[in-house]
Image (cartoon, rainbow, N blue to C red; front, side, top):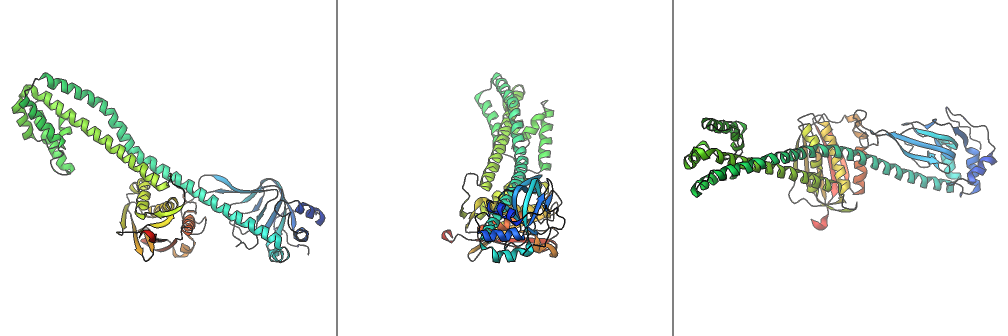
Length: 481
């Protein structure tokens, strides 16, 4: 039988004798080992085709119509997933591509383009059922090639999504680290000035030659600075009132009112300062106040540096836990509580930027789940990130987790506008996204579905205006329950 089907807009090569095509098939790397009679069927039913450089063999989002047996040249698919066009797969001499036996006939994620002058033998989809009957060995080879291609696409999708997630993580982490790092750097610079001031104040106090009882009174007031604030967590108004009262006292005694700012959040009162003045006299009072205030400022700066460095340590620990950077990617018992809190930590910058209220409610005694920690964290990151995108500034995201029989169910709900009913069935499809161009790849929820399948997990969604809820079900680790 000679194939009468032709490319809709093809440039066919001049007719080649079947014997010539058969000779090239016998030397084909993938198909050359098939029985000669099967190769003869391909030669008799195929269409010889040449692609010039830049010519498209299959358009993005259009169902594949042809099985392509590559004799020479180079065909490749390029995809732009938000970070510029990138080649995700290519085929050269000895490869097969396009439509495969038993495939679902899905559309490629990008245009298939000839990067070199390329010769192929094309088999139309209408002939695939006959090919399956007449060429079992060829069919088996093509099915293996299809499986390899599916694994490659899956690996490529995971790689791209991980790169995009890493980019978001890096941007968020940079923002999160910037504030404590800047605070630590600023406080460290001020420490040099503060130490110099403290040394000068100590020399001035020593020159006053106070008696032991007088020094004890100075230490008593200094102790009021170290014992904490007067009112617990004073409001801005209360702090301003205290600072104003202290500033009035310093002005009345002819001292720098800047001391008041350093002492406003301590237990020092005008009455305590009156007692100090009566004990040591006006002549030594200035040196004593200078020493007390400079000591207080130095301790404040040390506290700021400690808090900033501790925050940096916490962020690094959260990122380390989120990425499992020091652990192999194996399935093991995972603490859901730690997994969710680490994910929220790395998404903290985005949460605060939109002033979103995130409520985390986890049942007591929640069992561990059996999963890959890094992959599970990527699941939470994608779902929670989508929820943060969905809500308006000042919106709300609720995250709950509970045990249901032998499963742990995690729910992520947001008060966004919801998902339109007509597209709810498509949100887990590869490359489907409702986000503007450049803001979404359409891979996030597809990756979530794939990663959960690898951990025996399930995901479902319910959505209406004002509430969208994703429910993830994972197998509990009953050996530790």
